[in-house]
Image (cartoon, rainbow, N blue to C red; front, side, top):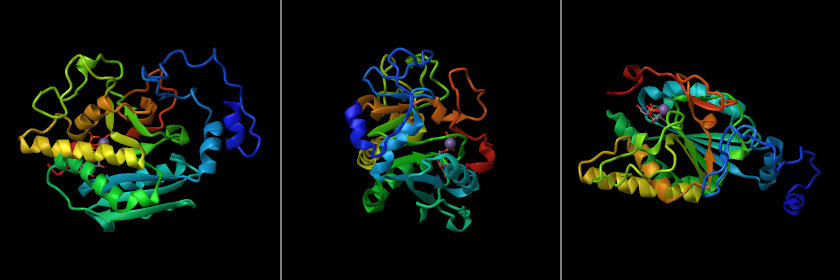
Length: 296
Ligand code: UDP
Ligand code: MN
């Protein structure tokens, strides 16, 4: 409401009048539980920045670069400096087994990077799975005291356009670019009831991408803790979910609805041609030769 804005904005800000009648009609911009789905044209970047900037927030960004994946760090960090949460305090946490191979990238004022050494692994499935555990323990040890919001991102990716304060929320997930045109029975959820990530054919909201988890530090903490526990419970029963943590993430988000959903603009794939509803690609996974970068 306008009263709220007057209180939050200490200077007058002129912006386009919001309309109740005119806006995007080619996409759905709200979930059935009334969480926004963030698409270009559904928000005013200057207005949202003016709401969040005075809060003096710090945004943590975790990224894993284990083994040969260190090669993706330079582009990831350089493009993040150009497009990711510009004007906010950002703390990158780089987890790697090769700290000496972390490139030195010039960071803008108010942005900071720490390197945290973690063990390598011979199985990419295990690296993927252990991300939840490492994020959980690093939140406990450090991030909880150092940041308000957190985004956990895949390193084999680049930013291409603004990813800003419109993405902030209590629990934030991104719609996977590969499945948003599909019916839920075609989603690659874990389908075996023996797994704690199991989702029956007639359930599920969207297929969320595992390359991004975000939100308040405490909400992401609970998510990583629950997913890690379930992953370990499955391992004890000799079962590994179809897409490891992505499967557990999807199960968690079915039961704990995200408060904000990012459109596939926030997680595209470079091999995929842009579709008409995607007006801007903000972040995308680069094309990689799996045989080249994965340990097995
Ligand atoms: N990862 C890593 N080293 C590996 C495999 C994976 O550091 O050998 C990390 C990295 O951050 C990567 C993420 O785990 O972005 C997810 O793995 P990957 O990108 O290979 O999965 P995909 O996006 O292809 O499903
Ligand atoms: Mn990836």
